[in-house]
Length: 381
Image 1 (spheres, rainbow, N blue to C red):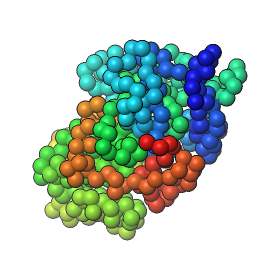
Image 2 (cartoon, rainbow, N blue to C red; image 1 turned 90 degrees about the vertical axis):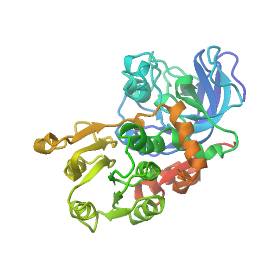
Image 3 (cartoon, rainbow, N blue to C red; image 1 turned 90 degrees about the horizontal axis):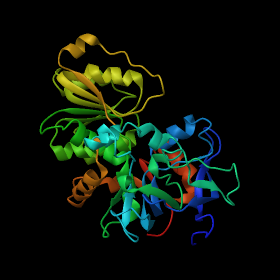
């Protein structure tokens, strides 16, 4: 379908949330054409991330109705006049967006962009406009989009040069979308944020897709021991196959006791807390060896607090928050792809594909642990 000559819009199919916590519903919408700094991408596939589910279950008006999705991969269809990084026909992965102008963006820390919340979760462009509308373009029928600068639970999405990464032609494009968020978050936490050195010990609390990416990165970094903790035996078994030297089933084992046994009572050098449970962040600090670091990846409910022992922190221990694994997508995603080629980051072991119309089943399977990383097939590559 071409662009409408008056509205400069295209009919698309998107998964829409009408009410907080409601199922995704496929609907026909209209998407405006790209502005000068925007890129139109035909979505081939999109991963489902826990952040999509969290936002679905927490978003309030005026954020509804809304189109989510932020692990898209696809083919560039059209570019605005100011775009130089990609051209029509290029294969790309979409990642988080950032303003590119604040002090954090200009210093290479774009994951902490001053406008990160507005630009990724605000449901519109930074100027308040929105490219998504009900079919027919009726007044007052705006749909909130631009989620992570993409809203890729759709057949087409608008992105920018800041959150588009060109990828090689010889890899399955439908596989690569999750590199834009969940996988770069877990791997980046190990390789970029904590810079885990050879022979350092690490515990990973939560071995879903993000945690498994951290396990693979820890193995590539030469960490040992690598301890995976979870409640789902299937996840723990895969963690062991992907590089965890030890696994702990938290339903049956005492985490503190087992890690003390594994480390001869010293504790671990690093802990990644991915579950977003306040008591688990408290535990993460308790598991640390002296001068160890706990990295918080999981986003808890607003206002959640975790009691942390001040005396333990005095012994050189530290806690830091981590967003997107401190990754610069144009740099780190190609690095992950090369690690994949070398067999160091076999993230294809995590994925299961679903048709776009199966989005609600894919979300349900991820919630039970049946699937680690669901990917929706949206169109042919």
